[in-house]
Length: 315
Image (cartoon, rainbow, N blue to C red):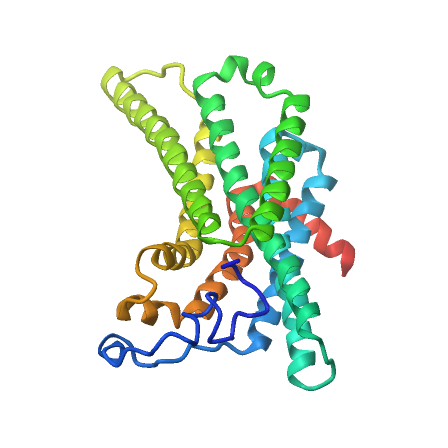
């Protein structure tokens, strides 16, 4: 499976570059400064993974603690934080074992390493699918809040929100297990199609939402009096999700481009050069999990206040 795994530094894995039995094209030097994958210190992966885990754990604790945050949108944000925690957990566990192996403290058979690889891959794949799914669910939630404000509480009930959460986690877990069991090009294609489908859905919803906001602003400026309007808190939530989406695409984009290039040009010199920087793309993926909690806190005063209370409780 071409996702972050214990094989991330191995030259013969698709995680980093092409299989070692393929000849190195000399013309690759025209595009690339190195013929070998760029290796990031394991300590950096460990630090970022631990930081991400602690940050997202605080977000989950804050939402659970504050009853004012017990709403569908914050439940979905809580699940998004849990998805980020899966990335952190897999990264910390994986890096910890890699450090033990590198220093000769732990000796692991290749079969055991492969099983660990599959578990880590499944966690990452589940996190990826659930993150994209919950970003889409939050976008739909904001859309309903703006266009069906009076009926929102009848549409997005607690029971319905819980059903959506269970369905997303169930589908993400089962799909990731199937993807790992049937490791092939078809799996990569499915991930890419899923990613593009969610992007198109979210972009369509947001174009409609912000078009409405623009028309509303023009109406107010022309009529010079207050009109009934969509809740500004809803638009603020939409803006928050826009920031989250932007960060997600910046951090996960290079990884998905890596997958697309594997499908389209696995032997082209320019593509092989791009593959050599795979470890950097993994760092970006982990940085997404680090940055998300900062965005939650920055955009929500209530969540920021609760986070301070939670931090002080541990101090």
